[in-house]
Amino acid sequence: MAPQFKQLRRAYGFDEVAIVPGEVTINPDQTNIDFKIENFTFTIPVIASAMDAVTDVNSAILMSKLGGLAVLHLEGVQTRYEKPEEILSEITQASEAEITPLLQKVYSQPIKDNLVGERIGAIKKAGAVCAVSITPANTKHLAPIAAEAGTDILVVQSTVTTARHISKSYRGLIFSELRKSIPIPIIAGNCVSYSACLELMRTGISGVLVGVGPGAACTTREVLGVGVPQITATIDCAAARDEYQRESGRYVPIITDGGFRKGGDLCKALAAGADAVMLGSILAQAKEAPGLGHHWGMSHPHPALPRGTRIKVGITGSLEQILFGPTSVTDGSQNLIGAVRTAMGVCGAFTMPEMHQAEMVVAPAITSEGKFWQLSKSLH
Image (cartoon, rainbow, N blue to C red; front, top):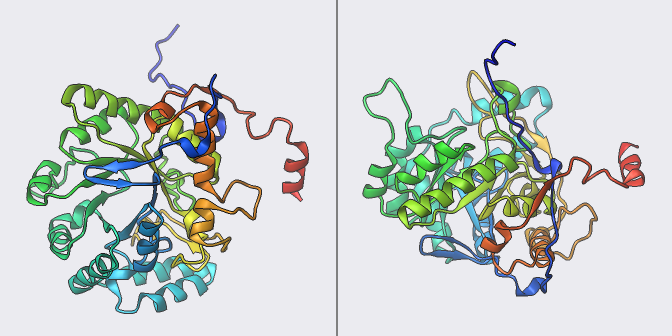
């Protein structure tokens, strides 16, 4: 028998697994769902993604008041335009044929340093925790401006992030040096493998974003064929986090980013080892979201290889309703925090580390078993 060139292992997404209830149940309101990044503690483990349709100054302030964190995209419309509302309106009204060229044009305008400072200042003035996102290519220029303006947390984000990036320039971005020059928490992403996650943590960063290509508005998996389903990616990166804690004594949280559609997905990510989740399309459905019922990916404006698509997500309720209820829908897309607390209660988990120990099973029929009437209804 000829040897195999490659050995493939099975990887799992949200719809293929289920959480096994615990032997003891606890009252959901007794669960502790705090999420910590260094000296910052958030009362809900939810981060609003750094996408122009999800986070602006107002929604960042609101998210902070509700106990979570929102990340402002420092390379988006908020920092390219004095009046971003006009641009957002234009994007949401464009036809399907016009949208990709329009986004490429919109994002080709230069980033204005003064707007970077103004947007951060507005969030801080409201008493909110401010997090901002930049790409590795612009980090050396924008990070010092953001730090001087008073940002609390820096997120360095690209489609795939590694601790070792090879480029033609003399020196790429070195996280350990960035950490020394800007002494605020740094979250880096995105990665999906044990070894890449472990190497990132060893650079001294404060958190890791997990996920490549699962987002509702992202087409990286179709265009590049790159990605790992989120449950497997989360489990692998959680193993790296635990190994790093063993070797260093430092706990670096992992944040599962993308691919969420309903409360059950959040619960599964947390059971798989995530410390928090980053949400995009779900929060783009909030009436306070800047996307006005639409959502588009950060990779969409690429001049040669756009890897995102604008989708219509609609407006389903307020941000508070989506996070805390009361729910007006039965599909699990509202009262996400209620779902997390209830799942932890059913698993007998008082804390997130205890939720990480919940048993999980491979269960491809978990969303279809016995659901004939629901499934047939959704087809019509």
